[in-house]
Image 1 (cartoon, rainbow, N blue to C red):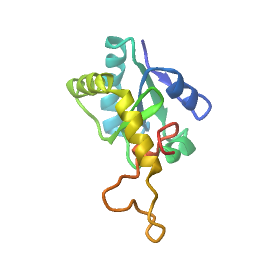
Image 2 (image 1 turned 45 degrees about the vertical axis):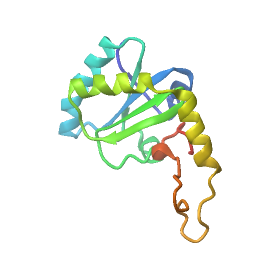
Image 3 (image 1 turned 135 degrees about the horizontal axis):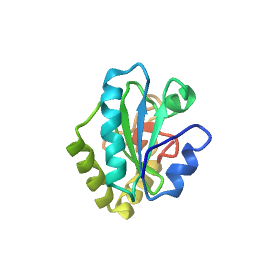
Image 4 (image 1 turned 180 degrees about the vertical axis):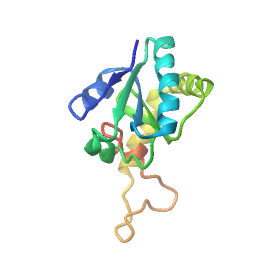
Length: 148
């Protein structure tokens, strides 16, 4: 399966209706993005069961902001509608394959339980930070991600 462009209009539906979605946030002026693009495209052909989407952050600034994208390229992985990975920077083909394997191997019942527990944890009113020993559980703040 080839990569396809994600926009504010189709992002939410795409990540929520497919089992696994990898997203490459990129920009046309970004050298590392141009180097990573062919790796991402090749991986899309080698993993037909995974949806590979790209977000041009210049064209989709609001979507990039909602996903808390601070630098490009940034790769995000969604599994069953939940953001389970978000990391800026390019990666080699082997790293992308390892990421796909790791995301596919996740126990999503365990992930959902962790997210539910994190959502149930009250934030400290004074600092807005999780209380000691807790996590915020926002998984990067991506649209469609748990906690956003």
